[in-house]
Image 1 (tube, rainbow, N blue to C red):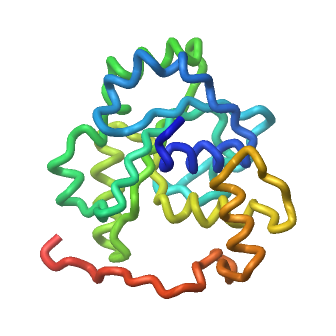
Image 2 (image 1 turned 120 degrees about the vertical axis):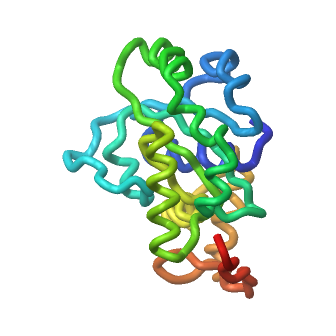
Length: 201
């Protein structure tokens, strides 16, 4: 898998005891992705007893999910404002009935949830809620911000561990080892410029 965004999401899922189905399970589905990357995953052990109530997931929420199809659309140059979602119908592709029927066949009729990975939503609560409502109206079950997955992945990685087969995990391990990640949310130590909210969204 050459896409670094999908690779990081896959690493996160595997840390959460998901088994990501081999490539052949999703070959026929790739035409539905239209610029995204679909990952099919099943938990290799039992789920948490508490159901997920929020549309926007946190890293720990994945423990309550059993089977998921993840649409990775980490468009790092964008924030997912309601205006962007309204003009991008492909974001709701996993909510379309004919796509869901094909996914049902992949999972042999067992229940599953859809998860859309986005770069980030607005920090404004009203815009965040409107974005969630729009995606839910498209038939999606959940969404998660890429930053949340990265923070979760950084938390799971042991700075003294050995992740030789994975260049991404080794990089995170070294960042932790040399103090470049800090704090409960694993913030980067070096300066990070973040654009402000755009008006009129």
